[in-house]
Length: 116
Image (cartoon, rainbow, N blue to C red; front, side, top):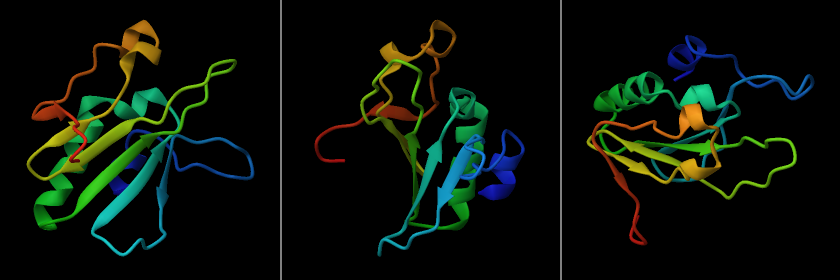
């Protein structure tokens, strides 16, 4: 995942408070990787597609990407994407995004339900 994400951004540095993403390396006991995106450009469909392709090698694994973006003066709700080999569950609330990011779409995606 780092190799993919490094092509589009830099890993978050907690000392400088700069960076585009952070892969959480805490084991939660199930087959899921958790990633925080600190910049909206990381939600580019090319990035998500490449992450999804990684899962072909790891049956049953998924990647949960959280929007960890805190625009100045705004309070965003929790939101993100759940990436699986065969689908993307889209929980992004684009109405909070600047206009240039509101039309982002992902092939093979669907809106999440209370069963996800």
